[in-house]
Amino acid sequence: MSSRFTSRLALLCALLLPLAAPSAQPTAARAARPADKPLPLEAARQFRLDTREGTWLSLDVSPDGQSIVFDMLGDLYLIPFAGGDATRLTSGMAFDAQPRFSPDGKQVVFVSDREGADNIHLLDLATREVTAVTRGKTSVYLSPEFSPDGQYIVASKGAFRGALPTLWMYHVKGGNGIALYAPPANPAPGTAVQQAGAAFSADGRFVWYTQRTGAWHYNAQFPQYQVWMYNRETGEREQQSSRYGSAVRPTLSPDGKWLV
Image (cartoon, one colour):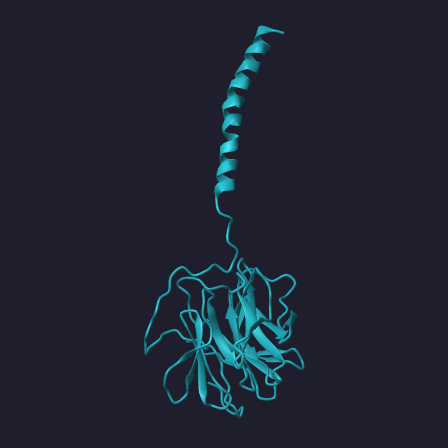
């Protein structure tokens, strides 16, 4: 064996031995460390709040006009329309938001991250039971709304990376849903749209919503969002507003004659 090869072998062993010897230490440390806790995490502390005001709340009025459901700090509440104390409907570490009543007033649809990501959920007001309508792990959801027959929910579905939210329809029993908007095969850069704030006409034929082109960005120039209408029978979409100051969150009156 040549002296040059022997020297290289000795150098290689000298480099390897210090690296190999301590390898058991991290393994022992990992074995001693408590196992990672799955979601949802258990709350370690509680914060109590007594307030008579709130900002940036999402709310809806019950079909009989007697109650208001709203979100505050990640929980849902029910309060008499005439005023009074609010009753908390959901609690815990999940962030629950954007509630809307079902047409019969027995359920509330809302968005929650209680499974680790945004999904659409239903709350039974009589039993307080919560069921998941969607079960994805990579999507975001906005502004869910019941159809007039109470069998479907329209919401805006997007993704954490890249995909802008557009209108999707789901059956209240769950499923993959169907897209109400099909983007062009080869869209030009900056022409992707995002849609939110769905509202049904009284007969369920039309879906009013808000649409804009492109993602949100700093120093945006008006106009931004405008009100559009989707025809469920023909699949056609038509812009309904053109104000320079933009228009958002269309809501129809119960008799279908007015839109705010």
